[in-house]
Structure formats: C-alpha cells, structure tokens
Length: 199
Image (cartoon, rainbow, N blue to C red; front, side):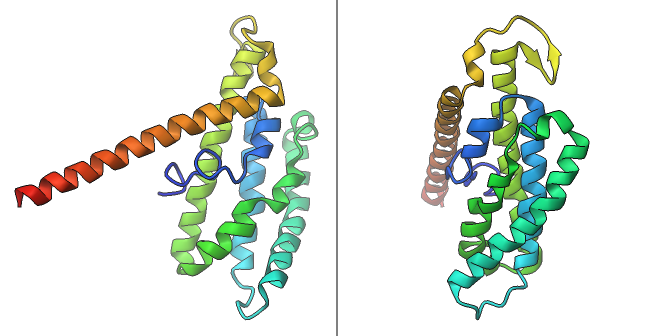
C-alpha cells in the first residue's frame, strides 16, 4: 500500500504533479486525467515487463516511451468519445513520459514478481487518483462554486482555476500528507520501543 500515501507519486514524491497542477480544475477533468493515467501507465508497465532486461538501459527507456505513445492513441480516442468537451481541454499526451513508467519501473516494479508488481503498480495509480480528485474537487468548488458539476454557491475564489493556485494547493496537500505520514511513523516507532521495553 506504499503507493497510496507513504510513497504517493504526487503528494510525497512529486513525480507526476504537472498534469494535476495545470489541468485538474474540476472533478470531471480529474476523472479524465485519472482514467488516462490508468490506461496509459498501467498497460505500458505490464507490456514493458516483457522487454528483456539484457537490453541496454537507454534503449529500454526508449521502448517504454514508445509503448506508452502507442497506448496513448486508443486512450485519447476513448476519452474524446466519453468526454468530448473535457478531453480536448486536458493535455493527456504529457502522461506518455510520466515518471511512473520511466522511473518506478526500473527502480521498483520490475524487481518484483509479476503478480506483486501488477498490484503494486495499481496502488500507485490509485494514489495518483486520490491526489487528482482531491485537487479537482477543491478547485471546482472554489473556482466555480460547484461540486461534481452541480452548482452549490457563488464561486468563493475564481483564481483557484489558475496554474499558480494549483501549484500552491498541491504543495499544501503534500505538506499535510507528509505531516500525517511522519506522525504515524513516529507513533509506530514509539509503540515498538514500548513493546520491546515491556518484554
């Protein structure tokens, strides 16, 4: 479960923040980002697992990008069919070179057995979804006065849809996530020390 919070690729590692900062201004946009990230990244990770490790590292990375670029085509077509207005405003092509594919595959996923890797990669994508939806929902309410597309009030802060505010919001959420994670780790460490002392 590391990918959900402790090593969240947006809030803890900061590896895939740009698409969320720029495009996640509403719940629907966050949904498009998450579905696109799932389809492009997860399929690419599974497919690229079969690329021989004997191939030079640089060539493997190029292959990863090539596979992700191929997976982008059906993903873009599907998103345009399901969300014709929103998909055109979300630049999902940037997800082709995201760090989950280019970095985590080599440093983590491909060091695991296939079944464990498949679940672990899915947890990282769910962690991305948590960050994307949190940012999208907060910005939709502040910038447009709506929740899940339904208007609830006048927009309290129209500037929340800007990239600058997205950067600040992701930073705040990252700080909260880090604070909670650090506190939980200290509690578990202190309880472990108490147990050892009792023994």
